[in-house]
Image (cartoon, rainbow over all chains, first blue to last red; front, side, top):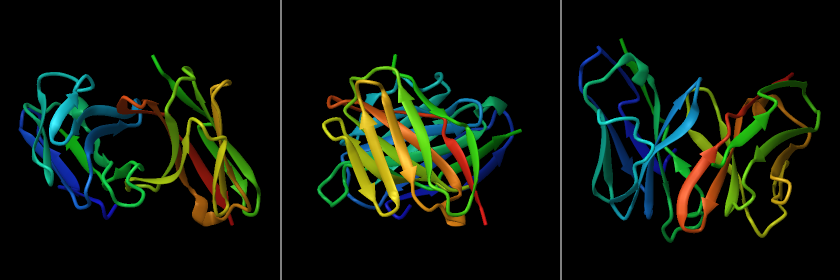
Length: 116
Length: 113
């Protein structure tokens, strides 16, 4: 997990509230991904960026979800307004760059979101 | 549309057994395939990556094979240990042009001491 820092690790919020999840890649990379994991649907790709530019957002469930990557060291996933069905673990992952093992998908520890 | 399936969904074995986890994909035109391990409450850790041109990769007690023509990959774990207990997921990268990975739903492994 050392390559990607996610915050918060746990978030409990009420339906209708805005939620912002954060991702800080520590190591160099070319691509950054946001995934969502639930028991019912497994791991789903929401969006991914290449050199800070969104490449494929076809997995973003609806307009309530948005993601940004203002620079190579920071990305956010925002849900506004949140709904109970958004409850899941959200993972950030990176790949690419020049370091050894850069072609391996490296995940953060995840942010567990519970929407009441 | 690429679909990745892992069978069985759960597996329980006594310590010391050799075991095989299966991963099937519907479209054989993949670029590579990765096997991951996920411990409860943690992120995924990459175990092995096999390029489409390779047949297998080995790391310690782990050996992963890839048969593109049949749409299958297997993860072989030798001499299993209680510390191997985790969920194992495979993921297929669709092509060189995209970094899109399609994940299987995983096999939850429990190795009994």
